[in-house]
Image (cartoon, rainbow, N blue to C red; front, side, top):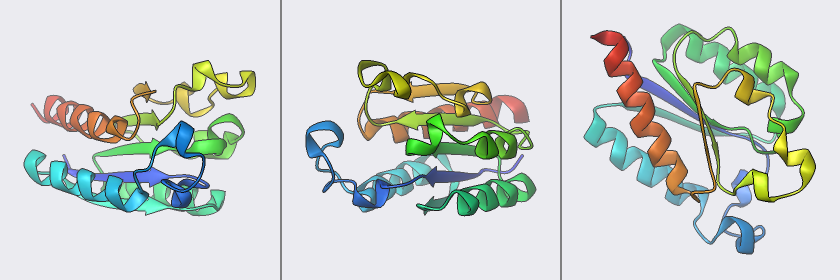
Length: 149
């Protein structure tokens, strides 16, 4: 079982730390990546960390993950609520998927309460700020270990 994990980030997360800090905080995506890489080293995981504002790039990364990854952590951002295409791509991926949201989407606008990605995700982490990424990595590592045993 591969110990490579893709961490995929959707639209506007490149503005993390600058955009709506009252909701998303002041931590940047580069800070999140550094924390994930540090933890990945401790968990003996390899990491591919990507962000795109383009739906097709996220789909292409999911397709690439099918061939080489043991898990996906995905924060699809606004694509959460709109992208059947990302759901369809994730449905072709046979290893663990954990969905992450920095804010508690259930305390926000009603349209944010529905997630297409959740229909495929093995777990969802929401409302723990950027710590949700490291929680998700820990869970994916555990699922990889359980599948390998």
